[in-house]
Image 1 (cartoon, rainbow, N blue to C red):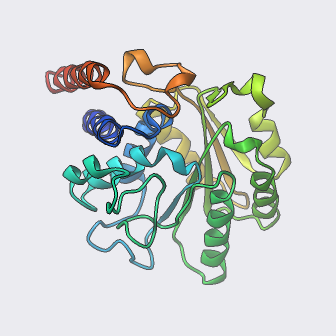
Image 2 (image 1 turned 180 degrees about the horizontal axis):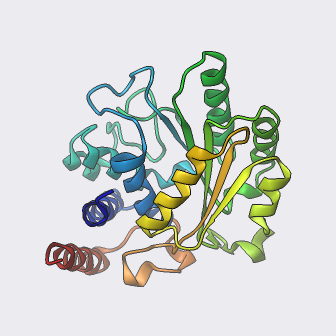
Amino acid sequence: MDTLYLKKMAVEVRKGIINGVYSAKAGHPGGSLSAADLFTYFYFEEMNIDPKAPKAPDRDRFVLSKGHTAPGYYSALANRGYFPVEDLKTLRHAGSYLQGHPDMKHIPGVDMSSGSLGQGISAAVGMALAGRLNQKDYRVYTLLGDGEIEEGQVWEAAMFAGHRKLDNLTVIVDNSGLQIDGRIEDVCSPYPIDEKFRAFNFHVVNVADGNDFEQLKAAFDEAREAKGKPTAIIMKTIKGKGVSYMENQAGWHGKAPNAEQYEIAMEELKKAGEALCRM
């Protein structure tokens, strides 16, 4: 793993997020930025994928269960070569294929349309079961928000996955501690998240810093070694990570920066990229 390269790509993914939501004058930057390092790790290190063959039958699958963080997902796909980076500026525009939630019918690399919270994990569980029944060795990944796991359907899917011992499935929870209405522990606490997944027969990995590539690598390596159980990776992250005024602010869950805020964000990311190039 080339950690420096991944850090540089994560900066580019974050630039794409800011460009997209600013151009759209709408979108969800906070949760996209918290998961930007994960998206980068998925598409530049972890997953068996090929942008030139986005429907290859043996590819690994990814389902963005927290579909509102599509800006981060799209930016990773674009930077990986699935479609032009320039198209990120068409986010949510009329006629654009890059709408507010992922659409598998129109976006190369998207394995499942998603957006209604709680439903993506069910689709991922179905994909994992299909792989098992068809004797395929692809892996299935799904990313959930910590606010999203307040949805009951999440636990129905987890119960099924644990019962069926789907060890080709990895569920990741982006635990920034914030959702649209504030702190998750105040809105409807899902804690302890790790113990809940263990109760559903998951192998659980806690990641102290989900914005650190070394820790992400260790977690996903452990997930690959776990047999007889699906894996849940609970990663602590910083909502809005990489843009100073957005960090740890629930208010940036679902709004776009104005012109002045856009310039500040892009300047911070530019400096972050330049610092990495000097290393």
